[in-house]
Length: 435
Image (cartoon, rainbow, N blue to C red):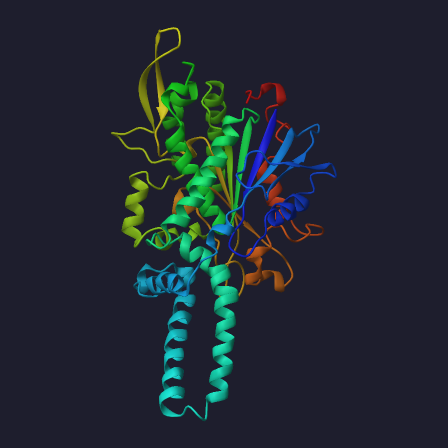
């Protein structure tokens, strides 16, 4: 048995493998890290980092999905399109956590226009030096930070005609990566990890690959005990008087049971876990749709899958199908719908709490109330004051976990990656389905 971890980096000027090396080193999975050719990715700039087998962990391959090179021709007008679209929204449609930044954005625009008008048309000579300094500072800010960093998010999250080609290239390559991993027949399990904007890309890849490549004919057994009882057990979990964490724990146990049953039925879905770190999906109603009503509609229609999947009195999560086996006999099976990847894929979201404007990660946040109560939201914490600032967004695995509490982000990340999947009560190697 082998397992694969796919890491998707966030915004910025990363170089190939830069993020992956730091990630693997931080996990401290052993000294025996092998640098091997990557035959799965399309880029020759990438490598595969492999960790050998241990008593509780199978051989683990780490892959990086690198997409930064697709965002090299960003222009200021593309950022202004996205920025102005957000500023022109009603304050009632802005995420509460982003209201202070929304106000600051308007103050910046108004003060800039006032200064330009006053310095150019009223008293240019008096403010000439200040004006030149500010223009140079803004030039550096725009071209070094806004275009290099904010531009990535502005383009990927904005389906403007200028951005469609780049968005499609990134999604296509990520879906192809997942398809090649599945088709390689090397792995029994895949874990998807997305940081910042990378979590949005990972979410898109999961929902697209699930809906495009899986067919009813891949179900080759009639033993569907968990599928038959899934709706009843799911409803019972979320109607129970358990705490939120208790409900999520029970639901993730049910997801794991379903994942194993589907694998035993030769259903070719290997992604057992999806982990988001500092995910902007917490602002999805503002970033993925024009308003809250449109976002809710897209979730109900299945365009944006939720956890657990939506079902109703008239439409179940599973579709009954009558398929013909290779020997010509007929078999009745139930097949998951196109919007149900999170019926069997566990979703864990790790984030720094954002408080009092200056503290914590304002980009990431909880997802349980946005994409479904089956998501495990994990709030993490770093003790020094500087590490409570906005810098926490880039510190999910970059800070040593020594002498930190149980809510240290790296400890939580290791826990929910489940790399030691043979440990304790989890299934041992002989109980896992073959690739």
